[in-house]
Length: 80
Ligand SMILES: [Zn+2]
Image (tube, rainbow, N blue to C red; front, side):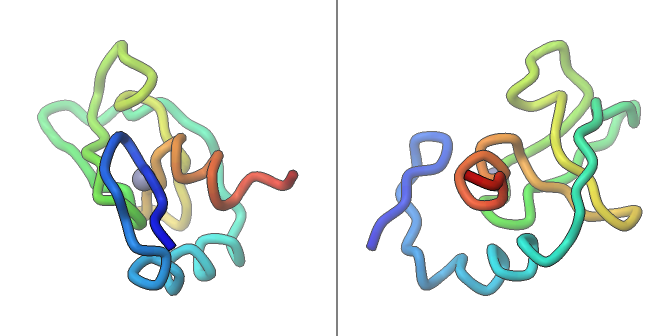
């Protein structure tokens, strides 16, 4: 089964472990504020950095260092 994230195809079995881990934690939606730095979405490796573009500048945060992009959150974590 293929899943499309930010226009790229992913195999469900490749990301299922991270998806399950993410589902077990509580995420906080915040605006990325670190200057001259970036992080990657745990599931799809999307780059998250300080930006006025909400697709890259706002994301879900957990535990001090773990990030999840809005698209992955919407696809995998958000309760239906
Ligand atoms: Zn992602």
